[in-house]
Image 1 (spheres, one colour):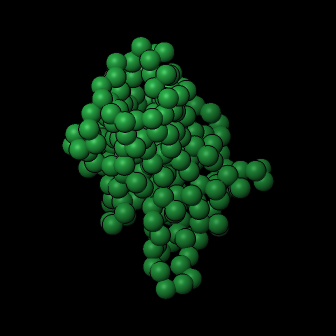
Image 2 (cartoon, helix red, strand yellow):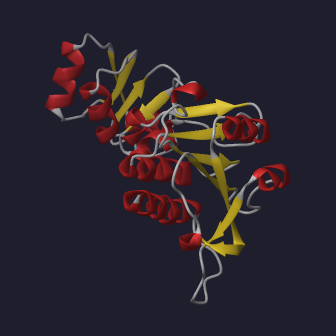
Length: 233
């Protein structure tokens, strides 16, 4: 898998992530990164910008790293604490949304994120870049079936809080104890089976002319409401 950008590269180097090789613009001038790559014995290949643009579709800033595919976590590693707070993404499709959600969840101390295997964005170079390093500290679990996973979480003592436009205001819900917050697809919201599996449905009141919020913004609002609720206990 390719990742790119100076900040991503620095994070990979600082956290001792495996780097198989580095592709640099022939006039790349960040000597600190270059020296770090050499110290780690990472093979370096120099290319023209046009050649690099053909490798990744994004602002690579003159550096692309070839790294192993993302290592997804096992679900049991994120659900055993009595105060586990999990975010479930029900077929989110935008990598920028996913990256921003990872960043928000890591900042808020969320225990882990669950995504489905099919019809969903997975961890790719754009997601990693947008997360600005947060992905290295956020366990992400990929599952085959969200509805069955939710039932498994319930068996482990979780309350499931879904999200929709017309439901109970998010600030009227109790998020104490083991809680999983479900964020639906950007256009279609939660799938039918996932919605039916929820214990509560939370909504964010729209007081202006805007009728919906970006998925990552909605995640931030509800996650931090959950954090505030837990601090009262």
